[in-house]
Length: 128
Image 1: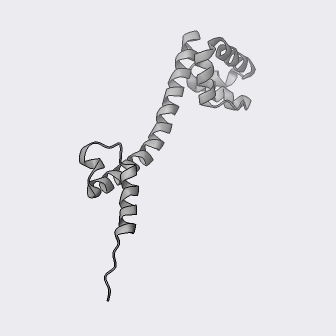
Image 2: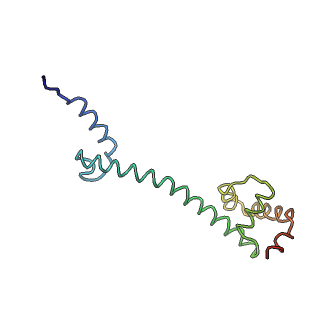
């Protein structure tokens, strides 16, 4: 049986992996075995942190909305605002509400006041 030379295919595979790891430091960008290990590690981290990033942004938006809402009225909070939004069937997500809170606080105050007027306050007194 004749010997098969894999030079072209193996080189192509290694250069493809090296391009991925070209910005890594030290042997992580020079040695093939450590490059493959670091590539796996980097892809796992990026996959995990995409979900974590979504969670962190949601927490940031909630914190911003809550801070602005509590600034105006002490008795009104983020949870009551979101509850009233759902009751009125207003489709404003937390990202948009946070942008409104940062850029134009008066607009968010107007939205919350409008919602508070329309919602029946008897339900709040029954709960408390």
